[in-house]
Length: 118
Length: 114
Image 1: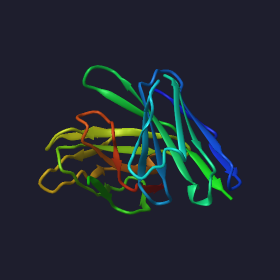
Image 2: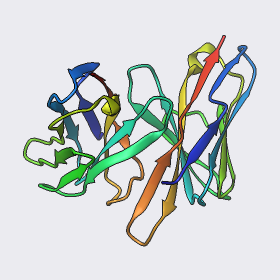
Image 3: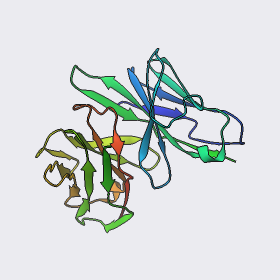
């Protein structure tokens, strides 16, 4: 099946710094990419939806200036956590969606990035 | 709003045991229902899905039936294997039959012992 990669898999940073996470679709072009956040023993929560070449759509309660999303190409989306704080520590997961036809779309998930802010 | 509730884990079973992971949902519309599996170190993979009431999704020996009357989509497998050890997520989407705008349960970790 289609493969989605994330880089880095783990990152530790100091409070106040910015961290960029990349999400790549390796063997297909993704019309839409999603970014999720998962706290320990919690559900995956959708943060934002991004379409190539347009601004991301953020879910209610997600600060767009805090979590910058850039979907510059059909194979790459980046999430930048700006001025990270310890409460931003979490597991961030991306997914990429391709259109297989008019009525069927399939979403593929990356392995996730563990962020720890000290 | 829409939500998904699934049984908390971890669930530990012996090989060849019967598996049930309960999942119930709350939705205002007519959602599609999904089970995803996440093996260690890998991304979530779609395991099976059902798009309307009474549909049964099945894959790799796993089954789940869309029960509108009980708003449930319980995952079952008759005989688990060690290789089934993973985290299982129940999810819903009210975006037609696609997997857009998914709402996930918290996940249930399954460990199968030889």
